[in-house]
Image (cartoon, rainbow, N blue to C red):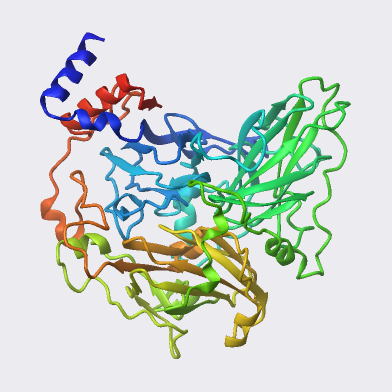
Length: 602
């Protein structure tokens, strides 16, 4: 305590006391390393162990639980044997793409090095997740949840739940991510996954022939009569999943930062990269436990029966184990419209407030003129220069050695071009580093046309967009007549069905270089992404964008600016501010601690 008081005294001498009035800070210290696990258990009398990416030895990683406008500081030590970046799926990083954690904005953290992310969850609420963004690493883990709570002065459009549960669902391969990369590099498809995990664990043994003995499964302990908020994230590689709880309805209340119209579902499709939160009331009898299920969608379900995640919901007064058949998935194998109609039913709650007191519907997106429109067409992977690649509009993105935003900051020319086509190119597909030149404060329409034979999800960093339309077939100018012009939900990840399109509208008010990508890891790895560059032409002095951080990493043509860092592996969880913070900022952290505006977390 004496040392802490001394730091505060020095902070006052340095004139840092105004920081006491800032929004709260939450500090996290993470060691990202491999742990050995076999989530799908034993097969053919041999344990299938493989490297899994954990954080502070845990898989999945910790939940970042903060409130609107808090400052989040995450010190990441890369204890992997390859470079690492962490991206924050759905967090908008207002004016601060430097913290985005993708190759277009950041140099990766070398093995043995640490780097500190610092960003503010400005004017946001809701359910999000983080994950490693390069080299298919998410297929090995490294993910965790982000909960952004409302400020106390903002009303939530439902009663306070009795508990909050985070659930990660996702397909899982017994091959590690490096083997999956090798398959893609050789032009192969990664094929059917080996199973589905729920919170990093394999399925409950609901069927002796499909599920081997000895698998650790997840159990959610609840109390009868209580209502829980359950946040579900699909963190998998490429499989859409249907989520359901045996015998229970779920009430959808929020998705990726937006409160939704409250609707009851018996099941809901959660596509790769998407997040939803539900209210679930424990209103059933407790004669036995109940199944929690995540099963594959948009596939031949008879072939994919083993690719099913099963956990257990256990009442505190339960009188027996779950048994019998799983609750049925949607019976729509020959109905192409069921899932899409379900997706269309997710609407914005126009009367609810969120991060601010005004209702969500106060932003009338339908009254704003579109200034730019891009039709982004995806197809099945193609061969380009003898290599298997994925494309948007005939272009396959290849990340340059120098990140785009860093190149801009230092005036490095020739790293990329500002000529991404508004419509699909004619002619042979090619590899390019072509970027969309977004108009600051413009209003952009993005139409995702999926001409592949499988489901895709697309995500945009830095923004929430309005989902205004989706349908089967080819999008045409006349399709705008079907758009939802009133209560299209605002979110950051949209599913696009095979042979279908989805349209979103986005207000380009966040300066930076922002990633638009397929959330399907194989498509993303093979080049199905593009960046949108948003620059304020009148900006002088970083009024609309944060300056490059003091701890920026340098690579590519700017490698000469990088100062060496002594590698230090296996850092323990710190009991103080993260070590890569400057002394002055550590002093501020100490002062905030005494002011009650400081949270230290593992």
